Image (cartoon, rainbow, N blue to C red):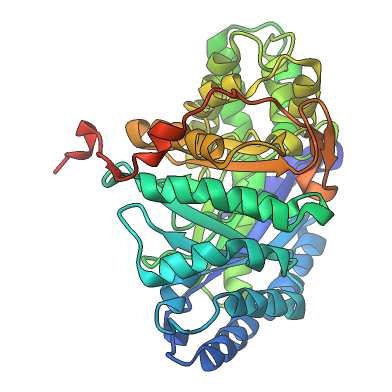
Length: 452
């Protein structure tokens, strides 16, 4: 059991270095809400979310006030909606999205994730219906987030799904073009998606999880950067040591919040995701950590090595501070959500090609990247395929969250505000991958998948 005195040394981190608990996310199973009548299913879903998560926001606010810990978001994740939609094939899946949105408004959470489909080996009718409806669902809702898993190390990559998602990402941006294409910012395409991720937009409640649970995501890039600045010109081993010690302190705080929320809400504690999740605020940037290590600008040669050290040290330090670590865990590099990444992209030191290399050693993948609005769906699909291949071969979670900026070209700006931030439109390689993408079929699993 964690003593509350253990977090007293983090007060300065909270006050001056942007330390926070980024999210308390309640995962809720909807399997007992499945019904062949879509109206009854929606009613059951709304009632269960409101019953289970009705006190989530208040509990988060109470813990924040009592312990002086900023808790930025309170969120809900649910069973992938494609599983629920399969029981009512004649119904419009967007009704589920509207129900999730209505429940989110009622209970006051920031986001609800799980308008999702898992299609790494193929499509069921429910999967196809939900995927086809994503552009409409995200254009008609405010709080709903969507994700699709197109590959796993065990199964390979569903290239038909990859091709489809290139079209869906572009259509979602087009459907929300009058709102800065924000729908695409709430849509993630995964390889090896985790079932207990508390971070949006990729959160969903996996079938292996309990009926209801609490997952917490912590964040503290500003704390890590400040610790490295104090350490001065030390060698790489000491850099890693400083990061490990800092990650331990950050995760310890997340463990306390998770246990308190679990106890007060009367649901099991799931995991702490010990990721360094940045924001657009100055002083809360993963890119600035890499620059503190000695890089002139994030994206310079050496960035991938620096990020690999950071990611590994964060995990080593954090895993000692929590009884259950899960989710994604490591260092996120969402371009529009990181002040240092935005600056690096604007000055030209950070490209999509370099970001792809960085994703091989960090959490998730090509995240919150704004691309020209005239990008073809095949190029989007090829970017998804590249990132899925990195996850496939390295047995890690990778993802793509691209925002085609409709009507804008490379060098223009697109701004969402809030945690989603904004930044420059980044150029993409325009040589066509169309023939490759249109081959379809299933990309075979790598040899390292045969571990039994």
